[in-house]
Amino acid sequence: MKEILADPKLIAACGLYCGACRSYLKGRCPGCRDNLKATWCKVRTCCGNHTYTTCADCLDFADPKACKTFDNFIAKVFGLLFNSNRRACIVAIREHGKEAFAASMTKRRRPSLPRSEA
Image (cartoon, rainbow, N blue to C red; front, side, top):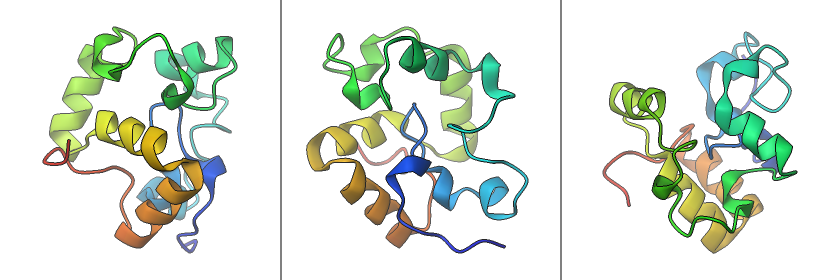
């Protein structure tokens, strides 16, 4: 299994931190940015079309939950199943930067902030 490292390049478009994801750490996934099979991800596609690295770069929506691409049905189900708060991740990236977010998630050893955090 790979070691969890603080690497801003491992932040997914939606704010998840692939560097602490079990699939990534076990070598079963290259991470969202490098996953050529993730064409189904509308958030990733949107960020690519706008040349954003993450939704934190988008200035169209002060709150990512207002974006229908970001806050879709699949995202809501994912959030419930995995206790994931991608909105809080995007807010943290905006407030502290990608490097600090990657370091924080590495320290927490989690791919996402929990739903209990705003």
